[in-house]
Length: 208
Image 1 (tube, rainbow, N blue to C red):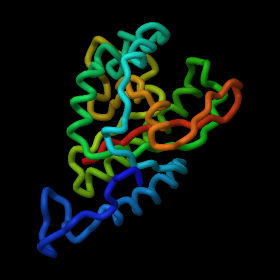
Image 2 (tube, rainbow, N blue to C red; image 1 turned 90 degrees about the horizontal axis):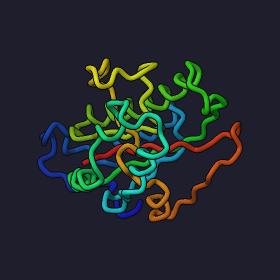
Image 3 (cartoon, one colour; image 1 turned 90 degrees about the vertical axis):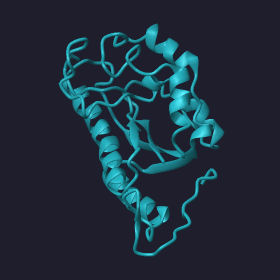
Image 4 (cartoon, rainbow, N blue to C red; image 1 turned 135 degrees about the vertical axis):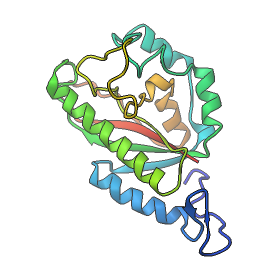
């Protein structure tokens, strides 16, 4: 489990601390989250200590020079935290859950409603799991979604966001190098070269 504790020391049976029942273990919560992930189309959960989550300058560089959403979305750079800020944020979390599943998106290279439906489905999976962890007492939990925010057909940026409570940045918008992170935890990854080929998507849930 990459050094992540699956059971914590509990005291004072029947009491609560910070909203989480001390008689319940992380193993109990993790089991429930695994079941929810399966229902949301996520077939792999990889717990990883946050000191193994790699933050790289080149990821933000790719956003600035290569993505048309740069400077046009509330969930993309430069609105998202800088790499240095992300490194500081990660220190406030104990571990992350890398969530992954296979998906087919024949509309990936199009900018239409069909593509947005798939992107919103991925967003929904991450924020649903985030909410369930929050309700179980992990009050700092925060999700970094797969791909990008697609709640609006066109982002209202720089005008007020239409979904300020629901919006979440992507891994890339947070300068996270998912390739090197997966390598550090011993997981293989693949660059998909065929447009219509099903591919594996990734998101991360930060947990304390």
